[in-house]
Image (cartoon, rainbow over all chains, first blue to last red; front, side, top):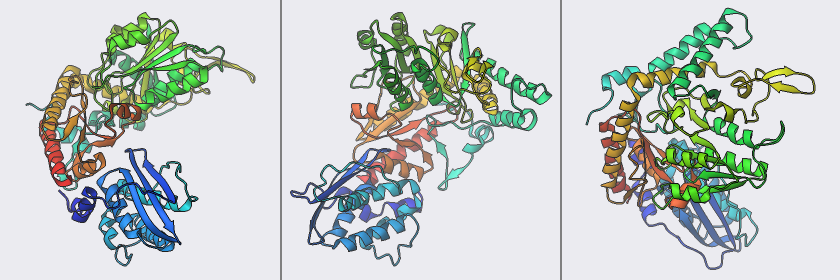
Length: 155
Length: 413
């Protein structure tokens, strides 16, 4: 097996895949949206409770590959209690690293840096961004967008 | 267990296979998507493009005549290959998708007069189909007002003649079915199904894309009005395919592509169409592709279609047995003996992760819905991993596949 694979599936990634954080439904979400990848059937719903411009609570549900679930799980940890500007900026930096437009060093991604290896697998970038796509869609939508349409995503 | 081609022969015969991927010898198990081309096919196309290339028909110069001859020789070779008789004709298309669209559109288009399909008529399509044999019929139903009915598979993914008999009625004008389901590897009893539909008076359509490389249908022995297949799934080039069938059925089709070469007489306000096959081949055809697909047919017969069929079935059986023996792996259509496709799901391991892990070991498989989303939804499997075999694959490659899946299960769970 080549080294790239071990780099892609780091222990921390597999650990989040096996035990995703904040997995489940929120009781009173203010925002939510769903991301789907029609190619593989991956389907992630992200719910938020936004209070005073901050993420007071976050949860996600659905199914996906290890990269998709681990990314959504680490995302939920990273955005918890953060203000929305910080969340948007983190998304921007994470996306830039995954799409090869920024180096992971200095991107200040925390645990999410463990997914930087995805950038070498163009077919898998959309897996790592699916939860993020839903999160951004939830933030962009009006409050109580509980029936936000599913969207296809492009890396 | 013997293998068909020795590794030493393989490298020369199929240049694309002689390479390493991620440092491992390539085990190419994605043949249901596209097969690799042998040197004989590449060389036939190179020869055409470098000595005989010109536009066909009507040209009075030497190269145009040579190109026309090459195109018509290819047609004759393919008619022979599929056992077409005097009552059959064969037209070249860009592939199976265009062939099936040509039929569905041609039976529902009223642009040239009354469409074959009318409101209240019925189209029956099997639930095993690739999107290419479903979406054109959805569109045909919308266009004509006909009703689309689905011959559902049972929980194991099989089709049954009794179920079809119950669906057929006096308004059933079309029945379309696959010769082998690309998503599951199921090989339906299509001979029996086509016969039932034909007896009921329906036009019959066979998608032979997944069968033509090893279990070549014999057209003159089948109650089949239309058969469709692609060059690139039978060791030939991409961008070329075939629609063949009974001449009388092909004549019912309104042409999909209007323009050059398919007309008899044109005025500013109207046109009369040429006879078959030109009528359905508007525009400059893929002549080099036609030469390539004919060379591929001839290559298959040089190796021997029965021998190829026996070999890929044996690889499929080997893979199905090896994968089923791993805990947590479910093989779809495990009963499908006459198939070159093994599709499976692993508990706790997503197909995309499995596909990436296998690629890291040089093993190429396909993952996802395989353009058959309704079928996989109905079977409740969701996305799958699919390995599909060709004459150049070996039992050692099957072992690598099974071992790779076992390692992935261990790592991911």
